[in-house]
Length: 462
Image (tube, rainbow, N blue to C red; front, side):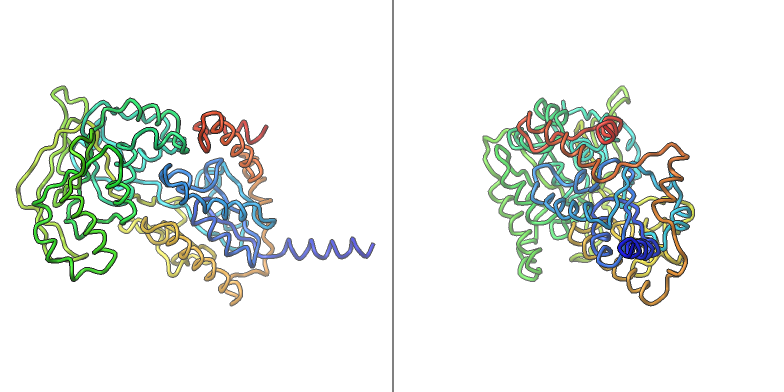
């Protein structure tokens, strides 16, 4: 009797504890949860049946070490006070207002699923892809499985010079042997095995001293087997003199680039890649029949100012490049999730003060939707920890009314049931995970991702 009385009291205190949920099961969501779990129970809602966001669908298949954070996220997902609810599309299946009624605090961590548009004629022609979709295709994002890029042309042009652009260039040029044991999708592997792409140009509007990629990604390009660097020496005029004044990371990056320019690489190499600086896209050029992209027109720029703040100004000169594949890697963009949430369309973020959403008590944000789509996973980790700390401070300072009992997931699950929506729990994701690893094993690779949401659900609920 006494024992059951204690259980009742304990049950009562836990049900009246703070209720917090997170929207988005990517790195921002999981890192925010990891920090919050020290103080409170957390529910994570994710649109797909599978967790981990861009760690699963963004990180390059030949960078498995970057995906090791999945081990940490899995510990969070298995935590007794953490509940994962996949296959729930917040904003459509359930509104933010409904979540706010059920929880004391709601954290938006849903990332950046939109693309920045180039805003040039011909952008919509077949043969033009956003890097986000192209990466989603080879990484098994269900919405990109029908992409079917035509790789029968010799030259591909990538617009943008960040790490994502270099990932795409590397995947296009890497020997298939280098990829076949990774978790790249089998259909992408087969398409790449038959690819005719031999030359990849990586175009940026500014100069070598403003390039956005990091040295690790550049080194991987320089070291690609059977591939040589093809640069324009004119792009590097005056760079050697500027070297001594550069901060060390920028200096090392520039030195590696200049070494590649000087050495060029093996003339017998079948494939080549190169940066093209001081160029902005003006128009995608269609073939004679107007049906697909066969080239791109670039404006030649000159730099105004110097260093990181230098601006590209057009010179009036144009240059046409023949190519059958154009990939725009100029950035991801967050989109509004729900009319009830403030959104800054110019900066494409949820306006916030240290993660507290503007004018909306109890609503918070972390990750790319908080600060814009920049930085590496560690940047998102720090940013998410910060938001979680602010939320906990607000609880302790009495800024959130915890005296009101909130039903949490119980109410939301019941609501979703009336709408014919069934969630995928973390233990059910683990069934999908096991199925993928099993498929991968038979192909001699880490995993073979399921590409079809219905198939995922069938396995999850079996």
